[in-house]
Length: 161
Ligand code: ZN
Image 1: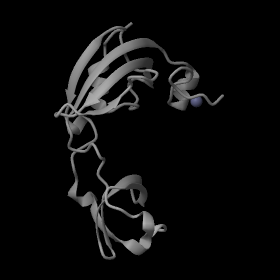
Image 2: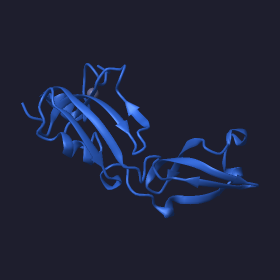
Image 3: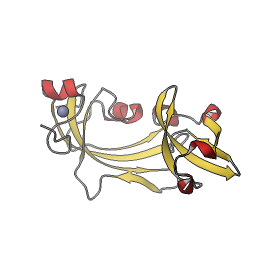
Image 4: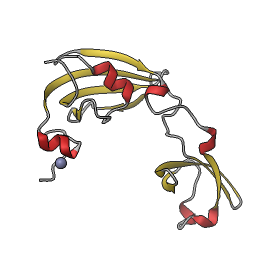
């Protein structure tokens, strides 16, 4: 069968940036299982997998627009050190979750100067072209229950029943 909407797909993958640094990989782990066509994966990867079959191997380069987005200067902010509960933990480079008007986002501390803490709420992979090597391991229909939950049950998925 060919990958189409609402199929449960298992893939092995390796993700590299344009300098061939490995950013993420399923190697040494279970394959990644996801429901195709409902936004479980970034749009560029779902598009590349559409119509593929078990055993297919693909290489695809995905632009930031179809991955984790382009950098937005509006997501750079300066906050007061006093706003942090554990001020000893506030260090350049650490990431933390922050409540915003758009919901919870990941923020990275980029600079600390006195009481001013500069934070960046862009996704760490914003602006980065992603190079995926993907192998399709299996394809099957999703169950009603999996579709209503929006995630995969069983191998490679959730175990909560
Ligand atoms: Zn479930």
